[in-house]
Length: 150
Image (cartoon, rainbow, N blue to C red; front, side, top):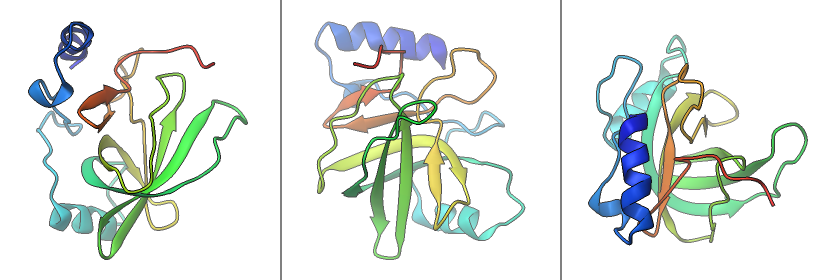
């Protein structure tokens, strides 16, 4: 995945959009994940699932204040369908996502049972010990490399 993301970064830097070269969101078994609300409902209902990797798409419904206690993060909510709204936590060390309420976004990351559900690790893992994640908004990929927080 890292090699794909490095290549993707190079392609994006010469003008191609992320939608032309989407990275795969894979679970811990290496299986490619797809956006599927019924699978998400199953994961949300399975109390024994241990931090599964998910790929979700939705509409940004709320933007919270950035959290700069500890590692800096953007926090926002996406409406996946009429009954599912998830909090997304995006580490600012991997870039700031240009969030706008009402915009469509796709997110790959680790699902946690915090509140109604939260997705974090929405960026690549520079240590290689965790499945990589990312976010895509307006065809632009975020989370593929570290970016100094400004």
